[in-house]
Length: 112
Image (cartoon, rainbow, N blue to C red; front, side, top):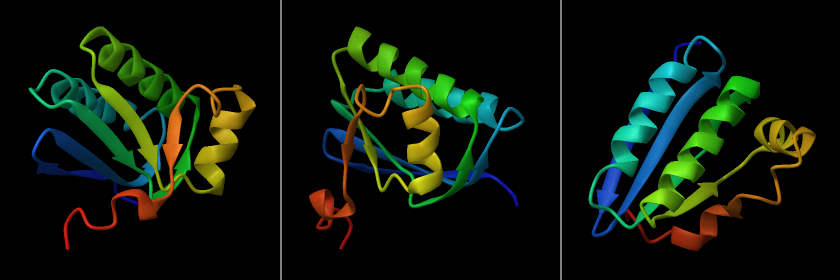
C-alpha cells in the first residue's frame, strides 16, 4: 500500500492525516512532515490515525520525536483515531500513557 500524508489547518491547529502503513521505509517522510508542522506557528498538532493500517517501532520513534519537538516549542501534541494496530505498537512500548489520545468525536466539527 502506498503511503501519503495530508495536512489540514484551522486557526492555531494543524492535523496530519497519514494514510497507509508507517514503517522504516516511510518513517523518514513522516518525520520530515511532522518536523515541518512542529516548526510552524500553530499551537496544536493533531495526528489522525484513522487511515493508518500498521505502524512499527520506527513510526513510534517518530511520534516520540514529534512529542519532544512539540514540548520544546510549547505546542499541544495529540493523537486521534488510534486504531488497534497503532495502539498495540504504543502499548508494547508503554507509550500509550505518555501521549494524549483522543477519540474522533473531540473535533468532529473541524472540517464540516
